Image 1: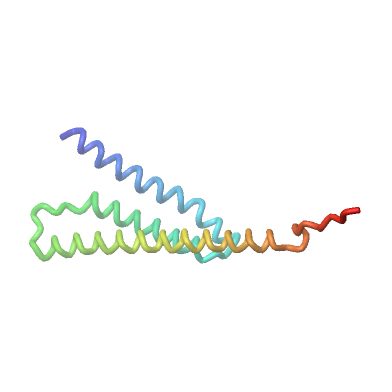
Image 2: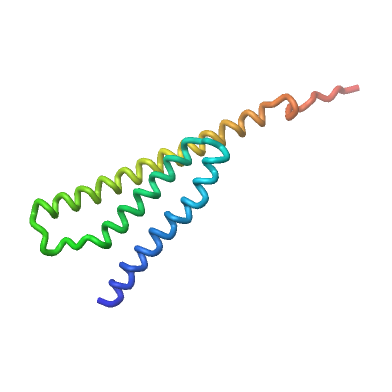
Length: 118
């Protein structure tokens, strides 16, 4: 039982820690680039923190059935929003960098010049 309590507390520390770490990098990146993908990732991290802390703090034993249903529904919808926002932000970020890479590759300075044969 002590092992499971340890893993439960470790998951709290790791989940919140990684979300906070991502926030420390995403916010300055948004300020520099104004890319909305960073905002979506930041919102997903905040929801991840709320979801994880809520899951570890709220005690479901002794709750009435309606309170339990509300608690689990809130937690599950927060998790769904977290996943959707982080996925959407990641896809938007990758698309923006792939489109920039395509523009750089197609620039006139990078085109090969034909060699003349004598």
